[in-house]
Length: 243
Image (cartoon, rainbow, N blue to C red; front, side, top):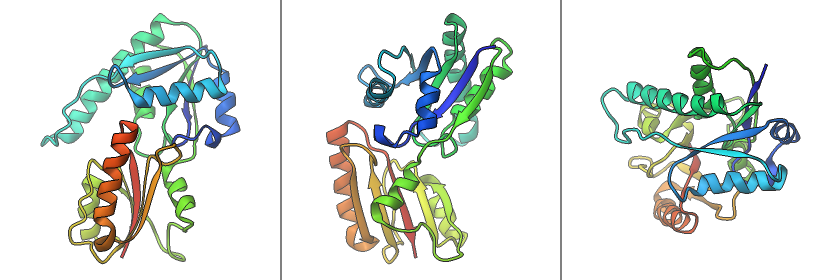
């Protein structure tokens, strides 16, 4: 029976791919990778990583189905429909090509990534028979802590991990040590006295870091985000907020 391998590849630095992940990448016949545009820098980054660890690897680029990027009333439904469209597109590739297949997941598959859910959908459709496994990767959250030389929590205290869209809810609920991912923009009004440790495009040549009191460094972070987007063509940031 063929195998599907969901492989965490870290935040961008080929040196941060684990030996287990490299072995998994070398075990498959080809990789299915989403392509968001004709000149997708994240696709190019995955291809560069494969060139380093699996020279000559076969890549099947699948145009990522469009979804409503607004925040509709039925957000969960919109995301579910998007996942179903992805599952259908990936299924077609898998049915057309024999052999074991790999999915390269930015960072770690456990943090705000839907590849696991999409593979479950593919198998639930009943057209593809396969065993599957998940290989963990270094996450941007781990690299954020390493770059800033910090522990992500105070002694014996919890961490809240959330998205920028849900940051206000976390603050209102009393969280005071919050890791934030998936930021379309920084919206930190009311948090001026909090401390922030911020990083963008961690593990890449366009990595940028800022830390300090929010009220003092918010403008610097905005400028760094813009510069990162201009230099790399994309920006993916994460940050820790602590009151």
